Length: 87
Image (cartoon, rainbow, N blue to C red; front, top):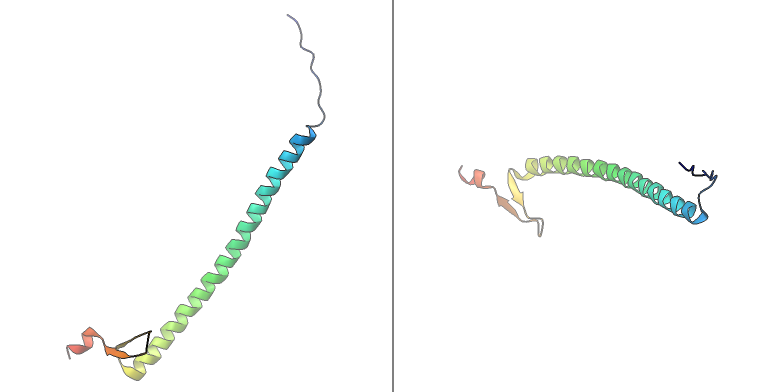
């Protein structure tokens, strides 16, 4: 059997290196973007929780002032809730 001469290659081709570097850079940039979006998501979730808490406090204060009613977000008119009408 004839032996095949092995050639030791020490580097990949320049074009292959550029392609490899571009792919890895894309992955790194994408992961960085995802991390940034996760931080924004956490900040927004915190703001949402705070807004919901503020709404609950505001609704309690409105109920103390006006009773158990519905308030139109369009013009602020007050309407009795259906369960209040039975009284």
